Length: 269
Image (cartoon, rainbow, N blue to C red; front, side, top):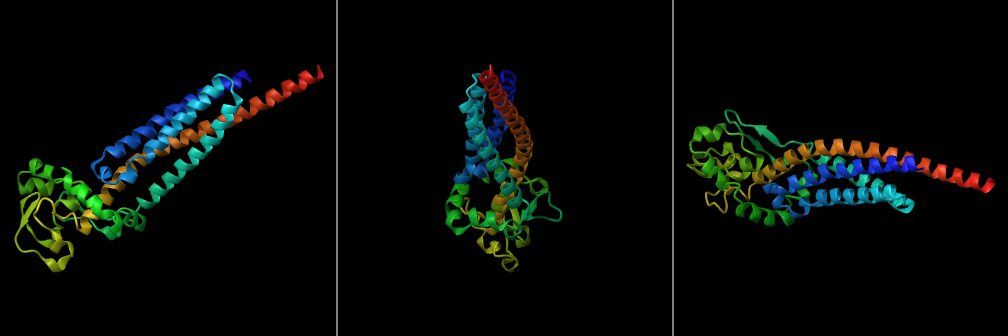
């Protein structure tokens, strides 16, 4: 039984280490400028990682000090957390699969169509109930003003690999036909009939294209790109956690069997 408890303690230490990449991925996502404007999306992954940390620590203490009750609690809670992480991974994979981007001939950046992203993201992030606060947050950020310091000439700007949110919110769609003056200032007659966003564009730094569908699409493009990066780390972590959990269950079951056998022998002695 002592051997089984030692194995379980080692496995719980591995599970405890696995909580670190989950927390790190959550903090990385929360630190992104676009996530700062979507408050409900910022911290769930961090909280889930902290929950893994606490549960793994509980299991480690239970195994090291031979507290069978704590080990039982650990196994139940770890099962629930792994299911939650799997649900989060599946949801993130499904809603970030559609890609609303399309290439712009002669440009280094891509542009984005709102209809190209999943309906779930459109309803929960860019819907009318949420967009007002997100739009105000984006306008107060330094995402677009930084472009004026980064690019001096039109050639540099057109060759740049802009982020989805920079492409969608800080400039008008290319099909509008505006002439470049600076990254956030565009002049000349526009082809209003080409797209509704052409009439919405405004050179006012507090307006720009923050009310455009292209800005909403750019925000979703940023989220998609960031979550798909985080998913790689989370998939590796959840595979390790499932492996650790299955071995821990086997070790716990063996320990219980050995304890029952020991008591059985003592009863006959």
